[in-house]
Image 1 (cartoon, helix red, strand yellow):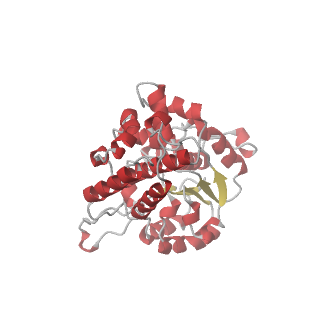
Image 2 (tube, rainbow, N blue to C red):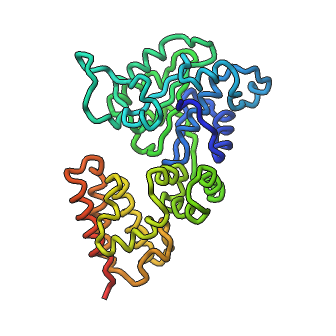
Amino acid sequence: MVSKTELLPWLAQPLAQALSQGRSHALLLQGPAGVGQLELALQLARAWLCEAPRPQAATQPEPACGHCPSCHLLDAGSHPDFMLLVPDALREQLGLEGEGDGEAEPKGGKASKAKPSREIKVEAVRQMLAFAQTSAARGRAKVVVIHPAEALNTVAANALLKTLEEPAGLLRFALSCSAPEQLLPTIRSRCQPIALHLPPRELALQWLHQQGVGADADEAAVLLDATGGRPQEALRWSEDGVAAQSWKELPRRVARGEAAALSDWPVPRAISALQRLVNDLLRLEHGAPPAFFPREALPTRRLVRDALLQWEGQLRQHARHAEHPLNAGLLLESLVAQGRQAMRPAR
């Protein structure tokens, strides 16, 4: 169940901060994607709902006990005072496919064949508002976790505003967010921000090793760098079959025009990989070290900066529509061909 989640090692301090300094009924957990915003939100919900007698809790809030009836209900995914709002597209990934989808059912009772939405729609927020208006079944609190908050579409966000400003009774919110600039200013102004940062490198590598990523520390380090220091994203890449060796070979294969190097990747991830490659190439042209690839995997000769910038612009343009390409194969072939041209050494 999604509610039963281990506390990521780098979240212990942010959790203690949120419990001790979180004075608002709504906390906005914001930071780079892949560092555990959802896990922190769920741990906060567990702590707010925990029923274990803890004498210090009044002066020094503590994490959930994990043993009381409330914690067991959350583990079973059946706590009456807890609600999680996520886009339909994330439900299977989070293990929620057997639970209600939070959207209104289509007329006639037939399951929709449409592609699962990546937005949190107003129907889900209206169901949450009905949940919020009832009394807490167990008397501790009622908790709503929204992940990711930037997935709220405009109508859904506006429907949330009044309740977010004037919550009923014991209602509390934890909003997980990796792009706060995409939230309505009125949503941000009603929440107390809790900042998350990239975890320390050694702690992230240790955690990846515990998750079985890579045969050795060097492989885990390559994937951690490839994902910009985001350990959860590095784990997902590893689970999806992205190997450290294939990442190190990617620049050479793009320089040879081999679109097959990315043929098994989802288009958004493939474009993101190419963007990271051109970013590192531009960093080298400016005398800075690469951020995503090992230095030995990148060209040693100077490239044409204008060609790199043109390629970077094309990648940025296509990234806006990466979820819905007209022809994924042709798109990747075109982008890799542009990369091959851009990676030709300067004369």
